[in-house]
Amino acid sequence: MSLSVGLVGLPNVGKSTLFNALSRAGAEAANFPFCTIEPNVGVVPVPDARLDALADLASSAKKVPTAMRFVDIAGLVEGASRGEGLGNQFLAHIREVDAVCHVVRCFEDPDVIHVRGGIDPLGDTAIVETELLLKDLETVAKRLERSRRAARSGDKALQREAELVAELAAHLEAGETARTWRGELDPAVRRELSLLTDKPVLFAANVAEDELASGNAASSAVMALAAERGDAVALVSARVEAELAELEDSERAEYLASLGVDSSGLERLIASAYRLLGLITFLTVGPTEARAWTVPDGATAPEAAGTIHTDFERGFIKAEVISYDDYVAAGGESGARDAGRLRIEGREYRIVDGDVIHFRHNV
Ligand SMILES: Nc1nc2c(ncn2[C@@H]2O[C@H](COP(=O)(O)OP(=O)(O)OP(=O)(O)O)[C@@H](O)[C@H]2O)c(=O)[nH]1
Ligand SMILES: [Mg+2]
Image (cartoon, rainbow, N blue to C red; front, side, top):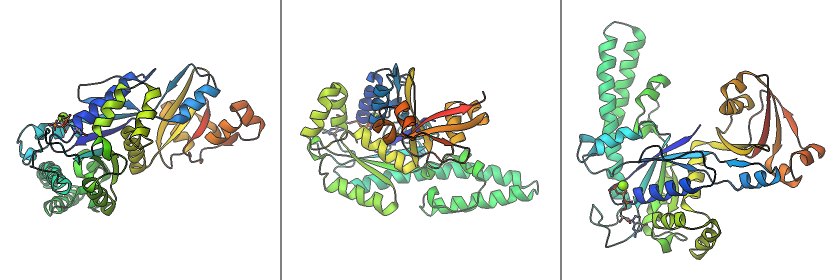
C-alpha cells in the first residue's frame, strides 16, 4: 500500500519546488527501490529512524522504507474546471490519490508574481476549493444523467441510486464539499466517482526560510482554517526543502537547527498525512532486509500479513510480535525473546504502530 497525495494550489505557490525537492530527496536515498514514475509523479521514502535502528541491531543487508507518492499538477486558476488554462485536464491526474495536499502561498517575494496580486491565503484557498467543487459537480452531473437513464428500466435500486446522486449534486451546488455529504450512496459508486472534494485535505502552508520556526500571519490563518474544519496542516518551506535535498545527511540536521526546527517539511507532511489518513507503520527485520510497512490503524494481523503478500493473509497462522521499544531495549530479537518480550498473537490481534513482526504462515 503506497500512500498517494496530489498537490493542488494556485500557480506560483511552490508546488513544483516542493515536489522536485521531495522527489530528489527520494531519488538520492540509499537503496531506495523506487524511481520517478512520470515527470509529475514522485515516490518519496518515508523517513523513519526506527528502521535505521532495527537494521543496525539485526545487521540487515538493506533497509526498505515505506513510501509516499506525490503527484504534481499545474496550478489551478479561476475557471480551471471549465477548461481555463490546462487545469481541467490536470485535475483528472489526481482522481486516484488518497489525499489532496493543498499548497498555500504564505511567503512574500516581490520577485515571484502572485497571480492574485498579494498574499491572501484564505482568498486563494477559496478559489482552489471552488475549482475542485466545480470539477466534482461536472463529474456528478455526468453520473446523474447515466443513473437517470438506467433508472428508466424501473429497477428500484437504480431509481434509488439516481435519487441519491441527485441529492449529492444538490449538496455540491450549495457549495458544500462531498466529504460533508452523509447520503447513503453505495460505497462502490462513491469510490468510482472519486470526487476531489471527497478526499481528506492536508494543507501545506509554504512560508519563507526564516519563518519556518514560528510561522507568520498568513500561515496562522491557514492553521486556523484547517483546525476549524478538522483538516490537517503542516508548515513547510519549499525553499528549505530544496536546500535540504542538496545537503549530505550530516549537514541536514545542522541546517534545520540553524532555522530553529528539528524536522524537515517532508517529515512534517508525512506525519500529518499519516494522522489524517489514520495510518500506522509496522516493521519486519531480518538479515536480508529491515523494512517498514504502512497499514490503516486498526488493521488485524492477517491484514498486515496481506500487505506483504496476499497469500500470507490466506495462509496466516500467527504473528510473533515485539514492540519496537522492547526490541531496542533488549538489543535485538533473541534478547527480547529471552526477556519474554516476544508475544504470539492470533487472527484478532490489531497491529500497533512500531510493532516488529514475524508472520508465520503455511504458504
Ligand atoms: N521566496 C520563495 N520563493 C519560492 C518558495 N517556493 C517557491 N518559490 C518560488 O516561486 C516560483 C514558483 O514556484 P513553483 O514551485 O514553480 O510554483 P508552482 O506552484 O508549481 O506553480 P505552477 O506550476 O505554475 O502552478 C519559483 O520561482 C520558486 O523559486 C519559497 O518558499 N520562497
Ligand atoms: Mg508547478
